[in-house]
Image 1 (cartoon, rainbow, N blue to C red):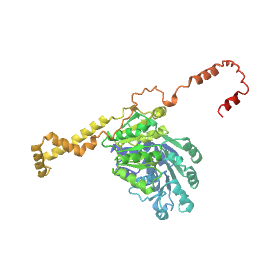
Image 2 (cartoon, one colour):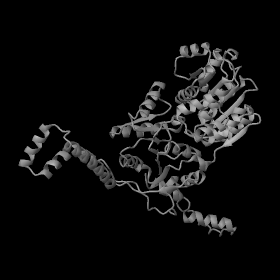
Image 3 (tube, rainbow, N blue to C red):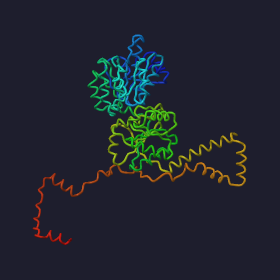
Image 4 (spheres, helix red, strand yellow):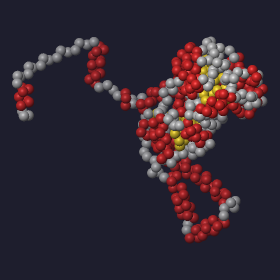
Length: 505
């Protein structure tokens, strides 16, 4: 009851508290605790910095629902009163579902408007009347041009994952959409990072806004253990395989920098027998929704994705996050790592760092203020021993079931017959070899160069010393010493060049 009281103290109504109980929320997150009271006041614009998984959707959805619910149904305008803009189709569906679940007990209509879905269904929903529209900028702009969506009654507009929308080139669409709204509307901007373009957008479209920034040290989960391997680029895939194999319950995200790299790593994992899928922007909407659905249902255990494709997709109970490629910004690293170690469960974040990237990684580690421990890459023997222990536990469990009588009598008869003619150890070894030899097969692994013992003072290849001749010229220029006069050349004999050429005729 004490935890629910914290939500009550934020100023939420009884209906919101009932929805929170139904959702199973226990205590407000930092972004909820700081944003909800400000938004409930209904005055001023707001910029909030928060990563996925911190409850930012509820932070803006609950005040919006309170605002709409405060207007009697007969007095509400025909058009939407709230618009939430998101960068991707998956996030659009997710945010719309979250708002619907928080609207428990309220007569509030929501609609997801995104590209790749049927226009006819969206036309029908908008014509019937909706209170909250969640959409992607491109499709929202299409409906504005078709005059099937009017924004003249918007009271609250939310830019969710604003940094990603700007990176994806939606700035013109966003500016046009904002220009179609009333001047007195409230504008809320939520972002995992806070680049200059967002602050510039705020200066153009916001007045008297409040900036709520969750400090970096608060954004990393204490339940997430962070480690890194130092290795060469060509050894990354082998290190990825070993990281997966050493964890029998591996269920995680592998982050790559580009779509091409995603396809390459995903194809190699699948061809190696791993239960993996690839997620990036080139896939169709149906494919992306199916992949995310399969991941949430644990029908696949490895999702290889880019930052943009994975932004806003909340997959619970992830055990691992693998940074196959370093992100460009420290905030992106924090955002990736924050996807595991949630809901009281521990997680592991593994980062692959090449010697060329070490300086960049040191900067990320400094800005993120994270304790990232250097570890050795799991050896083949480590993996085999781990598999043997798991196999032994499984076999002992099967033996216990047989001892309880949960085994057909015909199997006991066959076992006795074998033991009469062969040694028991040989029988068990033959059965294990036939059924489980693949699990302890060493041929599937190749040698890898673990740079765990590399001295941090070692120079990467890109920092080789200057050539002595170049250093001498630089030193002489710095000291402003006069250059020694050159010896005059001896005059060339006339006809010499011609004579040399004629020798080859």
